[in-house]
Image (cartoon, rainbow, N blue to C red; front, side, top):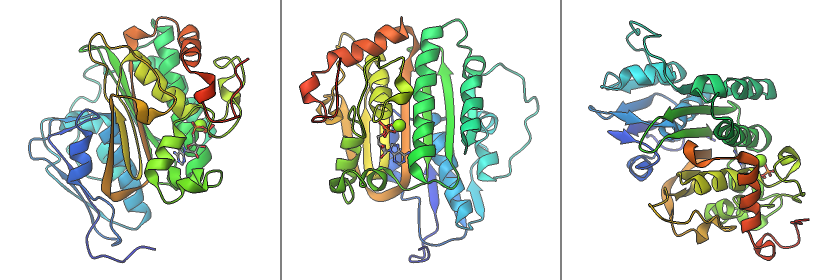
Length: 335
Ligand SMILES: Nc1ncnc2c1ncn2[C@@H]1O[C@H](COP(=O)(O)OP(=O)(O)O)[C@@H](O)[C@H]1O
Ligand SMILES: [Mg+2]
């Protein structure tokens, strides 16, 4: 029930709000409060960079605020990156007024603007647009990897989150340093601990345990052989493989739910992209306990597009890397 504290819901966007610097965003904020009006979006006066994780979080936060009857106030929206945020649809989702764009179609962007997905049909539409919007038509394997991640993350929201607003998704293709696609999906639903606690009571009051379990292969069911071809039949594979794709291509991956925030950093040069069954064994991981709770889930992944030479082979090689005995006891059969 809302209305316990007198603080307003407030989201502060730092100068750079990205998966790389996500710690700043997380520790600067406590964006949900029990009071229901007004909500405030405060951009850094010289805010310069928001990548998909920050965009999707802000949009989902805005959806939560609207559900709870908050009017939206905004400060400093006119920074140097205002145009980009407008084109991504950030202010539209937040119902924040902004100057009109002079030439809406002046440059060919490579992004999926913030999109609210509530149904399977919405999801199919997003997946159908990935190739054209991210200009991946000539890179079928990178496209397959990106579509897989987007599809699994959105399906999780539709299947497990109970989110009244559905999922907020956006993605951006960056053409250098290194070439990659950054994907983020956020919801303000039940959160992972709550949904997982039906099968794993130990996850209920511990977001760290819940995140750790949720990223294991086979956590919610039996994994069948022919992993890639029957990916849609596999239970408990979506978060594992999304993390694995990000990791094996060398990209960032993040999962936030409740007061837990997990992240894997990009690979260093020369480092082997080993995928671990237990994400917390990954030497490139961070885990932070927040002083507040994200009421739902945020998942973000980078696919370094040049590192997916062949998606089916790539997919199988990840599974082959795992020692079957170390996977969730008794639930996984590799045949
Ligand atoms: N957006 C979400 N909201 C709530 N719970 C989630 C969400 N995403 C994942 N989960 C939890 O994590 C578990 C593992 O997800 P996943 O690996 O995709 O497997 P599956 O969806 O087949 O169960 C889910 O069963 C669910 O309990
Ligand atoms: Mg899933």
